[in-house]
Length: 229
Image: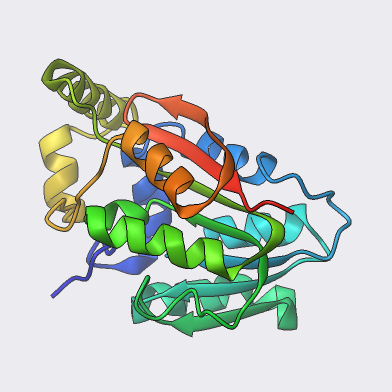
């Protein structure tokens, strides 16, 4: 049985598959990379939650050449792909199997940056709020949390608009939408996206400051906030 985040039965096709189903995937990643306040030559301690195949991790390690990243995912097949992709970075990256917020972040750790991409939406409201609390506690003073994820619209017509946009995007990549879903075994069984507005409120309630939405394209958004110095 597939776990949350295992959109495709074969993890080796995740990278090309996700680019075909998530519009502006690279732009979402670029925004996550550009959002933190850290200088590129700073030694940055990073926790990445739900790292999947390590695509964002590779970009982080390249963008911040003095950084060290702890990669967390609960899918063994995703971690296997990530290990192969990230082996050139040596001991700057560590991979751990675990779930969030149950296993990570751990209270005794302190990170300069916590990031996640297309993972937090698998949690329900209580899970998201618990995770935001745990991330806040795990950040060093002045640290930041940045998340790129699926969000839900309150307005039904905007949800329909987003679904149509994704179908058109899939077709633009050379797939018929139904053929794509059958071929890649995509599933939203584990999805529980919340509104962007709610999540910004929950971040503030967890103690974050400078909470903001940084980028949005239909029902995909990048948002975050910082821990006071």
